[in-house]
Structures are given as C-alpha cells and as structure tokens.
Length: 75
Ligand code: SF4
Ligand code: SF4
Image (tube, rainbow, N blue to C red; front, side, top):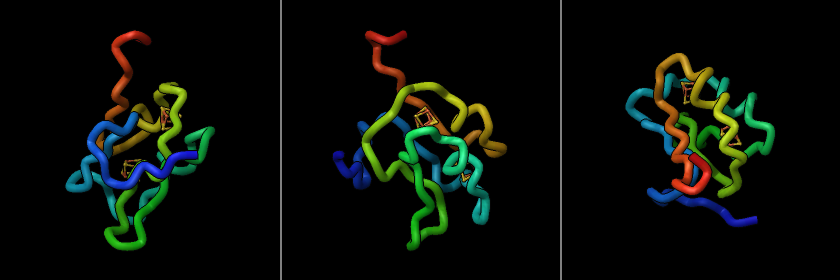
C-alpha cells in the first residue's frame, strides 16, 4: 500500500477550499477507505493511493470538491 501524501497525480484530488469542514461523506462512501479527513486542515484528502475509479466520492460531494482523475486508458 502506497501512501499518497500531497501529490498532484493521485487518483482523486480534493479542492480543500470547497470541502466542507465536518463533512465525511466521501470518506464514508469509498469502498477502499482511500480517503480520510486531515487532522491538520479538517478537510478530506486521498491518504492511500488506491482507487477503483468508481466515482461515488465525487458524485456524493455536496460541494463538488472531489475530482476523480480517471486514467486515459480507462475512459
Ligand atoms: S473513485 Fe471510488 S475508490 Fe476511488 S476514491 Fe472515490 S469512492 Fe474511493
Ligand atoms: S464529500 Fe466533499 S465536502 Fe464532504 S468531506 Fe468529501 S470533499 Fe469534503
């Protein structure tokens, strides 16, 4: 399992300026537990670099803060 840190090329990116503090919807819905809430910022981020590109994290986000960066070959 690879830790994702704050890289830009992770499968899912979250716009922290849009993410609503206290919300955990995307974290709760991810089947891989790849998303987490940062202790520092209170915002969601991808903490494990694993993703099925299934999409509910982006679909369910009320703030439209989640972007699933689907690889070209899977589109
Ligand atoms: S696309 Fe699916 S697997 Fe990837 S972070 Fe979102 S919910 Fe999790
Ligand atoms: S669903 Fe959206 S607003 Fe809620 S924690 Fe995830 S990124 Fe933030």
